[in-house]
Length: 404
Image (cartoon, rainbow, N blue to C red):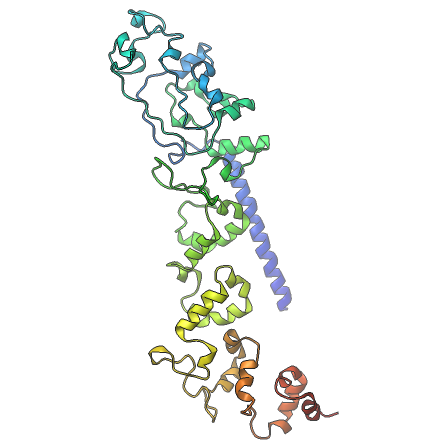
């Protein structure tokens, strides 16, 4: 019955991982289909725009986006300033006219710079200046030139401008909108396509002007990875979408966490004393975080748990790994032979199935009691596990024991 039960368990585990992958994909698809509120302050740092402007009125009058933002068609980086200067505004507004305030459209300084009372002479170099507009560069890779060259309309990214007066970071595209458009057009949606990356290829998380680090979003990828539930469940999410985790994390990050202060969350509290057997039976699982040749060996050597300590030599601080009487001539309750018969798996956990260590002593010390060779138990063991007997005995001796 156990094989069937194990197979059912594997099937359920696979089904659960598959279901999780579907749910993650569904969540991303749902997110991509809607605008999720204001744009991220991590990607678009806070701005200072001491201006008065009416996008809605300009668009209603038929003013095209490229008239005021002509440089956008050649812009290759978010660091470029795409705001119109006074010369551009002067196409419609007669800024240098002495009676500019009485014209249509109005052109006095405080029309666009609230509270600033200037004169046409202020436009000359060195003149008084209104409060400075500060729009930090967005923390993404973006080329207006590439997008406009591909036929992407301004309103595809800057939606709802016909109902907006002063445009701010809230009118900049969100990640779901970018992902949705890229998906429709068959353009890569890997995180590094738009997000800034470090030299090693992982995403840059500490970004200029951002109020905090770049973090994942979504129910299945919570921003707070320290949550107790996430610590226990992140393995399944990672397996379902490893590329998402790999955008920010390298494999060394896993090792740092699993071998650090969160170790009790990964392994049970008594793991040091019980890990041997599982380490032997599922070495590949351990090797995903630990290097057996360095991590295991260095730890065991530091604790004095090497083969040279057998059979029961005192370890540092007067402690022993094996108890007193472990190798006594007269077997007692703590004798290694008694313990081995009771649970050989515990011995195998550290010493492996290779019996060479046993032979080192027992080649000179008979492990069997008086009359063992003529007993029914000896014949039974020889028939059941002849390879064990052949570790020490020649085939002819075994044949004599088993008989014709």
